[in-house]
Each structure stands twice: as C-alpha cells, then as structure tokens.
Image 1 (tube, rainbow, N blue to C red):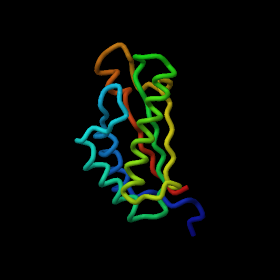
Image 2: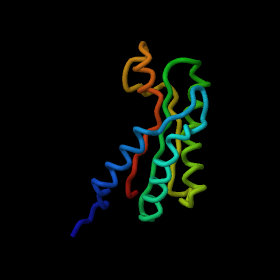
Image 3: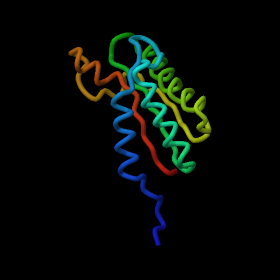
Image 4: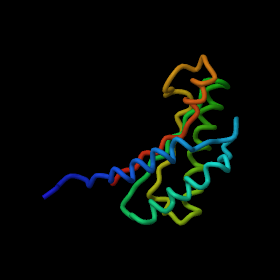
Length: 128
C-alpha cells in the first residue's frame, strides 16, 4: 500500500501550469487582469472537485520599486488570488498566500522581458 501522500494527477498539474502562465495583474497593482478570471474559475472548479487539494500561492515582483513596496505588492497579489478563490467557494484554510517581493527572481531584471517573467504569482498544488 502507498503510505506516502497521494500524487496530484498529471492532468491537474498541467491545468495549474496553464492557469499560472495566464495569471496577469495590472502594473503596480494587485488587481487581477480580467483576462485571467476564466483561468481562476477553472482553478476554483479543480479545488472544489477535490477537497483534499491544498494550494500555495506565492507572489513575486521584479526589482523596480523599493524592497518593502515590492514585498507588500507581492503579498497583496497572492492575497488577491486567494480571495478570488475563497469568493468562489474554496475554504480559506486550504490556501496559503505569501509574498516574496523581488527576492526570488527567475531571470534578469535588466530587460523588460526578464522583469515580465519575474512579476508572477506561482501556484503550487499538493495534498498536505
């Protein structure tokens, strides 16, 4: 018997990746871009279909602006996603939202393309 935690299905992980890639915010704002709402509705459905799933939402910014501001903005963005999911009927206890500001860049902040990649919210789904 499998004593470990159940694995999140590959198809669910794939859907989460698509949602994550389409998660956009207005510049300098925690307002979720309207183009991202269909994907977040999909996430609500996934979370409601499997009550055991847990979600960690991590907000990140690029290096423009000061550290404190970026930390706050990344936190607000992660919280905005959490609030959207909770409003859709997902129990808040199942969702952790945290902001890392500019401390975990994926790539350089020296180019517009790099900054775009660094401004993100990561979604990590699990069963613990």
